[in-house]
Image (cartoon, rainbow over all chains, first blue to last red; front, top):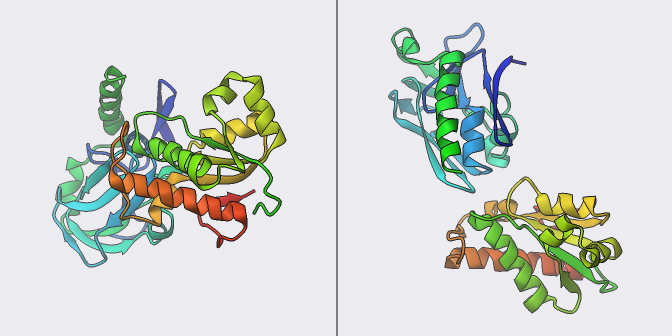
Length: 151
Length: 142
């Protein structure tokens, strides 16, 4: 189980897993142990902000991705959310659990609700562009503050 | 199933701001006013939250069908907190997953797909009340 940074706003608590990297959008990237591959998913704030997931569609195995290209789409009770690849590479695995029960993204965003495994094409050059947990936490705090202004 | 035609109370979500909550209420109206008016009683979630005696008495005396717009499942939780028994717990999202073509939009006024989704949900619950329906995914028989 990873350790988390946490913030509470209004009635919500948002967690950021400390063992991985993030895109500013809130897609996490976790290098696979003893592998060149990375696992990706959505951060807790991103899933809570968008609500219950009705459907999750991830590009199929074999898809070539450019960094920043849409690689998944999540339909929630609030919105259709486009997710962008945090790194370039090839999709080598898609979470089969998403098909039968996409709500796993809400239940377990950092573990069972992962989206895909990617074989990065340029990990060494793209990794520095990702945020560590503390940096993403600061980004998330800003996003939460913006949300609170709308309440 | 409800072979003896016992009265069933129907408690929909009271969420605002999202179409799924509206679907839950439309489905409850369809069920109670159109499909099975003789055996159902609509109970306002707000009255349960307030502890209104009449509403609490109804849920205490009759099994409840709850229809929730999101996975917070407020209606189901509130019935249980009020001393009632949830006989069937329905989540609009689960029904929508089986009818992806019926995407609800609009809040004060649902689009046509949302109206159809509400009707489908109401019909599924109505059939399950009669005991004639097939097992319905998303309808938990407690």
